Amino acid sequence: MDPSKSRDSAESTRVIQFPNDVLERILSLIDSHRDRSAVSLVSKAWYNAERWTRRHVFIGNCYAVSPQIVARRFPSIRSVMLKGKPRFSDFNLVPPNWGADVHAWLAVFADQYPLLEELRLKRMTVTDESLKFLARKFQNFKALSLLSCDGFSTDGLEAIATDCRHLTELDIQENGIDDISGNWLSCFPENFTSLEVLNFASLSSDVNFDALERLVSQCKSLKILKVNKNITLEQLQRLLVRAPQLTELGTGSFLQELTAHQYEELERAFIGCKNLHALSGLWEATTQYLPVLYPACTNLTFLNLSYAALQSEELAKLVAHCPHLQRLWVLDTVEDVGLEAVASSCPLLEELRVFPADPYDQDINRGVNESGFLAVSLGCRKLHYVLYFCRKMTNAAVARIVQNCPGFTHFRLCIMKPGQPDSQTNEPMDEGFGAVVKTCTNLRRLGVSGLLTDLTFEYIGQYAKNLETLSVAFAGGSDRGMQCILDGCPKLRKLEIRDSPFGNGALLSGLEKYESMRSLWMSACKVTLHGCQMLATQRPRLNVEVMKDEEMDDGQSYKVYVYRTVAGPRTDAPAFVHR
Image (cartoon, rainbow, N blue to C red; front, side):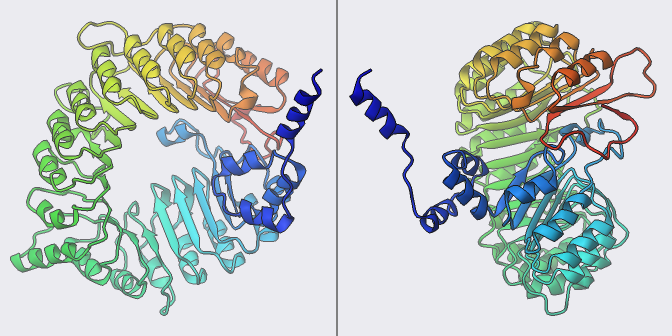
């Protein structure tokens, strides 16, 4: 062996030794949890330095690790983001009382992280008792975000408002909350001034407006305010006058008759919002009052109209005032003509989400189709994130769309009618999705739908080398399709499948793959309880959960959730979960 080569090899693998205080200072500047995890693998010294300097931890599955393990690994955490139920719980596919109760985590945090400042929960079960415990135990607590959580009421919010004296953020989004009353806003102390983010848009009851107005007036650092639909335009005007510094605004309902003077006052209030870059809400927005928004649209980068059933003409007039728009969420009531207006007015658009106003309406003469999507791809060449619910689509249109915008990282196309073929050729949609994975080499998330054969999944396995998340609904030909995905996508972390023909052969083909993934979800597929038991036996480090539909007696499991874990089988599984 050449000695010079040996010396070169040794030099290339030598780790530079920094003093501990210098190394810790360097690592404290790294925010990305992935980068920090990579850094911790360099050496024992770097591992320890990263361990002691870590202030934020992200846990993508509350059953993948225990709170005790997290506390031992990272002793100085100040901020936690924790996810619970599988994503399909958003579509009521996860049975009630499945689990993901946050309280066990809070009990450990109270003992190990008394200086915890920030907690962000998604799809977790959160009781009023847990919120009261949180407010009581963490004296320096500052930020609470609850997204798609359930189990609590406005009584829990009262405890947060009463006892969290340093609160800067209260963000309540899309939760299954028992909205008892709006009096919780009056529980903030009279001299309270620290709030920077307040979002209660998803609550349904009337709030104490006097308390809200006082809160907004006192909190001079308030940057984000999203109110619910019970706030009138007149009340909104009063809030805007007191908080012209807002950068993000969620309005209430536009369903109110204004006098000429009230209209002018509201318009003047929006003119005063010089820093606004995100706008949402706009319940029952109509042509009559949309013009009051125009003065505030110049600097908008995000416009969320997912609660506003605008027609194409209304959208066209609105986006004409949004030249810097980068993110747009709309309902399919805007139709293809509305999307054509977006293409003409918003050249900087990077993200588009089109939701169905009525997902159960099969009237193909309404909604959006391929022409609107194609128009946006032509006019908005920076587009890289799309969620598109449509009535029909063609392979040719999809191929042209990705040719126009080859930088897609997230491409989720949801053709509303299951098993829908190419609307012009009546062929499967294989070539369209094949074009997506061939053209978009940086694709990380993909959602497929329509009539698909194994060919689509062969394309995905062959070309989607950076794919991390794949969602499949009402599609597939045989077990080979799923096998191609598991064999061909080296970075796959989450695989979600529903109402597809994949069976035990497909499930067991991932024996070598699942331990490197975060999770697998399969529902209404051809997987049996026996197949799941075989997987669990051969891979004991996986949790394999089978949830049976009580009405099914055909020997097939109804819902299967597989995930890697270092915590072992969970102890709080309900009776309907077979392991």
